[in-house]
Amino acid sequence: MHNGTHKSQPLVPLQIDRSLPFPCSRISTGVSGLDEILHGGLIPARTYLLRGGPGCGKTTLGLQFLLAGTANDERCLFITLGENEKTLRQNAAALGLDLAHVAFLDLSPEIDFFTKNQSYDIFSSADVERDPLTRHIVTTVEHLQPQRVFLDAMTQLRYLASDAFQFRKQTLSFLRFLIEQGATVLFTSEMSEQLPDEDLQFISDGVILLENRNRTRCLQVSKFRGSDFSIGPHSLRLTSHGMEVFPRLLPDEHHTSFAKETLSSGIPALDELLHGGIERGTINLLTGPTGVGKTTLGLQFMKEAAGRGERSVVFAFEEWQETMLQRCEAVNIPVRAMLKRGTLSLKKIEPLYYTPDEFAQQVRQEVERHQARIVMLDSIAGYRLSLSSEDLTMHLHALCKYLQNMGVAVLLINEVEMITGDFRATEIGVSYLADNIIFLRYLEVQGALRRTIGVLKKRLTSFESTMREIELTRYGISVGKPLTGLQGILTGHLQIITPDKEEQ
Figure 1 (cartoon, rainbow, N blue to C red):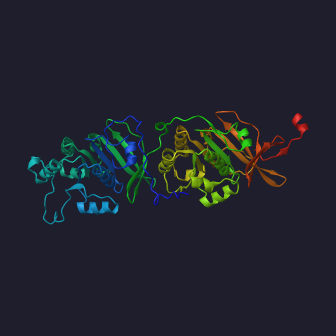
Figure 2 (cartoon, one colour):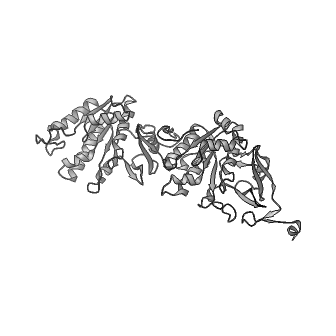
């Protein structure tokens, strides 16, 4: 079983969907998830503003932007106005980022700045060509001719301008100089209520905002001239090896062609109940009280898929691997053999650790990289924990519609609180999502609990309207004949109907 722990198993970046309409000429930001959000990466020879408060990851993103350039033998320059070069290189090394091929222009104040009462002025009101520091910038850029420039932070220059007009004019002139030298420029701002950065947003070609909200980090693109982009916010995580971004799942951006075929359960009586089985590319809700057999029933469909050579994956938010293995083997579902052959993957998910965007990335990897054809979420209640205060219906809708568009059969395990009686399909208002609703219930007969199964909804075909008894035996799942002699199973007030009562 895959552990699902983020620290020991980082997510593998997904390939960008090249079917999207974006210009051919793009350069990577160094963060694959952000490249996907930007529909391929940054447009070269333009300026991009990276906004955010302290600790949001601006410098980390800037470093990865430069390293993506050095990986392609591009000349890259880091202009720092705050932290000195030594500190930046040490911090990068701690993340495993090698800046050996990144050039630095360190304009941070020297140690003796105050003791010698020196003036720290880049943009003087006098002729800038006479200013030694400005000539240093010009000389460095003209000599290196960098293809990528990261400047941290542009707002430091605000303190050196006489007023807002001069700051805007000087900043525009500076950025145009860099662009004319052939550079793509990423620069940061240290925004605050006292010193907003709207002027920098206006003059840049793109704006990327990093922020902390609701105990999670997120990224949002608000401006990108000459290109479309994916709306946010999108989750991000700062890890021991840099920044990872997890694009928000937008189902309309993902499609594939697939045959609309019926998937058998391998149990003839159950297929009779479903008029053949479930369909590929449908959302199937398996609902019922605890212990009634919902997960086992879902794995039965996966057992049959394994026989066809197809891969399935279970995302378990609640149950551990060994418990599931023992339970399935007790009903003749060879889960261990399926895992060994690679036709099944069991992934334990810690719901309080992942955001919905991070979890969606894992699902996409299973579908797009490993061609999973059946995906089970066990259960909706566990998935809900990862949402914090966010809308369950919105995220579950996006995830299920994505899977549906990709031709995946989705199995949603939903637990209802009532053991018998007071029938409800769900208690959280998501039944509208389902193409098929299969419900399992307990009934009590002469002091013994028995299980029943029925179909409440099926969009693509008709279905049997009766209920049947279902048993979990050591030989497998057994589904009996229609229960025509009983009524009141759903209400909990069971009655045996005699032939005379049926005639009446």
